Length: 115
Length: 110
Image (cartoon, rainbow over all chains, first blue to last red; front, side, top):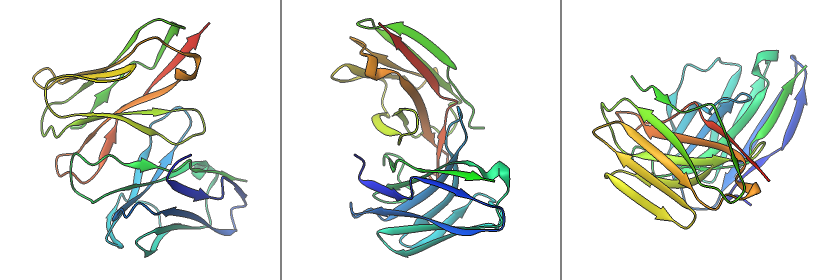
């Protein structure tokens, strides 16, 4: 069991649908991250939130829209996705952002399939 | 640059010892992490090295040589459950993000 929980575990959606991925942690961490991971590849950073403010957007297409309602929650809103967006989406958290020795704690991810 | 290289795949037998190597560009070094990821699961934190030498944690040890830009993860007394991907990762120069290596898929056979 991980301390970062993500829902749903699996999601299948059409290219015209709107859906949201959710992530929650109760470790008091103030930095939260979204990653995209394709099969047999390492995770690729998408967004970083620090103290509920967006700190990094790795040039992610606008069809992905992150939101951090409070220090424990992180959402990723999806709209008009493409088949190539099918991947495992991982959420992670760390105590603070910008400290090199802080390990990130990952959730189990949402496996997203775009039809 | 942030190139971090690992072997793509390794195989080993149960009970054996395996060493997974990771090489990286030494500029802006701020420490190196190792993660384990079973298929379809979360990456889990294994170790963090910032000083040269060997850090031991039970069956797993991690080594770092900063001057050589080299690290390895040593797994002893291999078990079937150790079959997983092993990712080395380092913070980028500004400490703003974790850059992952290509990952090594380890298969442990009976």
